[in-house]
Image (cartoon, rainbow, N blue to C red; front, side):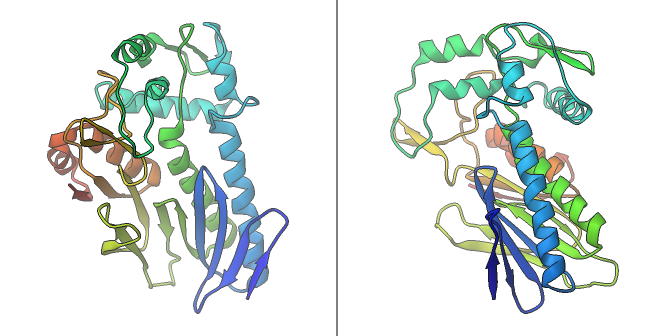
Length: 300
């Protein structure tokens, strides 16, 4: 039995859990709940939908009514941010430092030089070079309350937005219900298992070389999974398949990057950061992940 509300989420009962589905964050969102009844499932579905849309509105670069838009159109003037946004800026600044500049939220402007729609492309090096002048977190000014970008620079939180939403929704629903659950936003996942529940959630590892096919499974009770790769967004340059993750130092896709990297961690935000950073390490992705002492699956 299935119900659909005017807010466009769907609640469906399976044998031992409830499934909530909706579209947000530029993709499919699915939540599995081991809760008592339909009434509780509907309540949690509503909470998750509202929270997801709130975060999407707050962090999307495609809107003109949020802080991201205000910052990106500030023309060199400082912009005051709220605490939640400020905590995220603290986080990405820390990621920038830990990655020696490889993880840089100002590099999103480079997308203007590329299309990752599976077609052949002829890169415009002159355009890439001009855009690279607008890249570099070190050129910003952040004091914990206000952010100032140089004129023409932009921030893009797309690299952490979905993972952040996964963690926030999972924590919200567990605090509200105490029920075992799994939040899956387009393959970025967080599971929380209640103390009395013992059954883990089973997650398939997508095969990047075969659509809608899995090459293995992961049992997840409490933790997160995040995957970065070129399955859906890629291009060809002189016959070479190249993924959508761009090196802020060159403005180009990463040479010798894996087809996909899946990282298992405590939180989706940290797993997503490590998966993306591994892709940015290209040929040395496996070495990097091994040095981080995390569980991972790397497919080439």
